[in-house]
Length: 297
Image 1 (cartoon, rainbow, N blue to C red):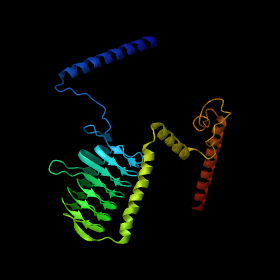
Image 2: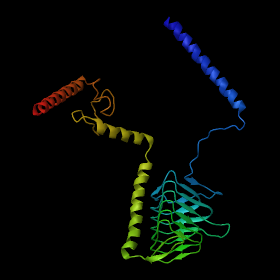
Image 3: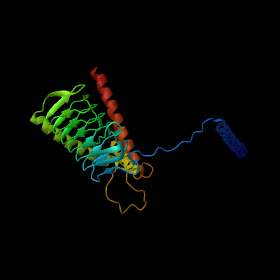
Image 4: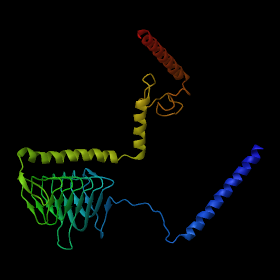
């Protein structure tokens, strides 16, 4: 009887699968605009008119979700963070050394109304969501989060643009000054400590970028192995055999890294006995504690 039931079930499953295929094909014929799913290509580095980005081999980090497009040149120890767009499609973008473009920031150029490229010097820190459009930033400049610097602007060295500021087209920011507001105006001169802070921030961003670059370079297998090691460290009982770095020459079973099969109660029953004794001991201690608590009441 069991064999007959199995055959009936197998035949029914085949019939259902065939009927489902017929329905799928019939639905496809009714579609007005046919849709084909495609894998989305990477947009981290994109060439425009045959010109591809030129990123230094010693650059600290370009995030997987960043987009570097067209005629872009980036120097050593510089970084472009998550979601940022550097688009040199109609003009050039030059980024110096030890400079960082923050998360979701936009760097773009101009060609239609005026011919402005983007020049960003060394030790420049551009905050998240900032807009750098067809302008020049000299060395040692800090641009705050969501600030906008527009066409034809020049920001001289050792200057800070405060978060949310709007530096309108053609404005010149003199060196050693703090600008803010919308439209942005000079607030005051920077102190020597603030000028030193600009360079320190750029160096810290470069170090942080190197760490992110290392983590993002890991493959799936390495990440999975690290996750397994972390869980093993959290869950492994100190009384169990601990993992070791060297290869065990006595491992004739070929079961690999100690900790997955070696320490199980299936292959080592004595480990199960140890665990049972430990649980019984803990249970006795709990009962004694409860008894002592009742006597105290």
